[in-house]
Image 1 (cartoon, rainbow, N blue to C red):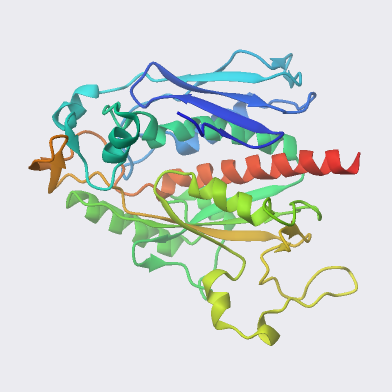
Image 2 (cartoon, rainbow, N blue to C red):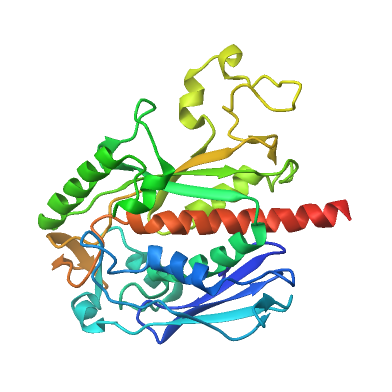
Length: 353
């Protein structure tokens, strides 16, 4: 299987399956001397881990990371950072009934077609549990980025969406279980998720992200545009169906005279429809983007599908699943953004040297 790595200089390679012994990763290219705050990494993992609230999967995993290399006396050494997060609460028997069945909108069919084999326990390599590795690496990338601030939050769950008229408070994000910066809408989102969960159904949603204090000059102007790599990183996250930055699709409804970001003498712009990126390169303004997540594919409802013999069968999801992945995906979005920015920071240093 190819495609297990992301990044050019600051590179993450992950391994492991949802119901295997462990998941893990190797981070290459992290500069030496980065002070590692283990409590911060633990906090980031806690934001993603299962079982954290009543509206997420009740799989109980401590998600404790073990580092095996690349860190000495609390600092990075510049050598590859190897780490593992062990699985401790697998219930593989919950998946015996779909051993030969292709679940609707899962990777079961495509994995079988491509590889001729698949690990049906929790989806194996296609499981969102792989993202625990991204959060570990993203936390280290954040520690390297120091001055850059990355803030993601839930801006939509189902039909409940934050609008420009709704006040937002970033301090509110971690004060509610849906991670919405508006307490009133957070309560409505929580109620909706709870209701849909009782029906054995699922919901999608939107995560918005703002990146502040980004230096100018990050990104390459042709194929490695900053927004292109951010888009690739976000679209690599399980269940993501869309990515837009700056004015996004709404910008297509505007006229150029309205959409253009005029510069001031301070080299800032009066508006920021560009989303902090022009010509694929950061311009120093805040970067902002939205990531759309589909409804979770596993339903505790009966569905019609086929088995590996092509026969029509009826199946029903079992086990522990998120009715909506969005609240737990907020730190994943931040982690992937951090990995992309760390990579471009190092590429820019090489360019300037």
